[in-house]
Image (tube, one colour):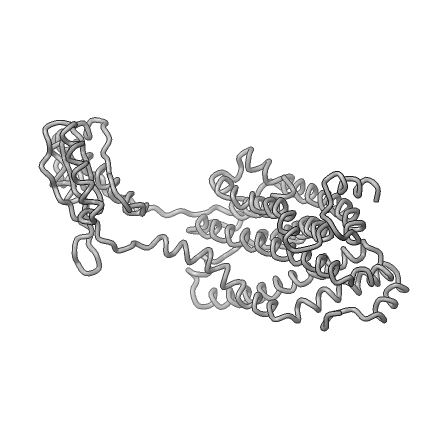
Length: 442
């Protein structure tokens, strides 16, 4: 057997004579010690938070930064009124002081057909790299027509939004000028108002609370998704390894199948809790340091205590729910290839709530959000996001935890029956009717 937390025959016989609790503890201790003594546990514990921040905060930061790219547009203005004002509206500069947007104005053709032929000729120059794109302002652009931008590689939302905003502002200035309003008056009328948002809570009001809650919600949901998947697959591999090495046959001489499965689930779950405890201590120390050095950053990094409490609750319930499914998959198969084929439906149940986070973000109290966050396979991620955005009513929280708890017991009962027979089946992957027969007859 493997070193570290491996079982000796003495342990097995001792456990066999000590009752179910002692058997369970022996298996749990073996699974726990075997994992926390491995190098990947130390590496994962140290690099886990860095990885989470890297895939959540860094992409958002890089995405929000301007590319600093120079944009050259060939412009056709058939309105005859936009050229000068649009030059002013797009007067942004790059760090070296040069213009960011260079507008090369073409002679406006007499009609739309000629304009389209001109655009076709300019298209070749865009493909050759002379222009970034073509901006066409048709004759009816100021009267409800569509301004059009043709480009080869201009997908940056920031640039597209800037051009759209400049065109609309230019059109507004022109319309106001037609009604006798001067440009200075237009600038004064359309001057932006600084906007600050505050989140109202029972403890008071917190500036910028919505943005920090969204980021914290995504980070917590991502941590939950990653740990449920990683530890679930870890249980599946542990069951498969013991099955292929015939260790499980030795275990079954002294321990019943159910304590073996529960011992593995509790042992690996304890590893997860150990990792969470280490991360929590580091987070508490880091937050205390930030609060002492920067009140502004302390406000931005604040996570409601209720979110942290339910984070642990949903991790435990979600872990037991998915661990039972992954353990059953591990017992049914005989190699990694079969395991990958069978565990994708379980993994898909974890992926779906991640795809629904945007819907929860837009309206956490909608009927769809409430119903989906009560589905046991989705609730660990979706309900946690709702709690972080806007605490749901107490009855919804209680109902969610209750449904999840019943589902955990149901999955444990079904997975236990599959594990009991599947762990001793070799040679071929069982069919669905065979699995259903195991569940009925065990």
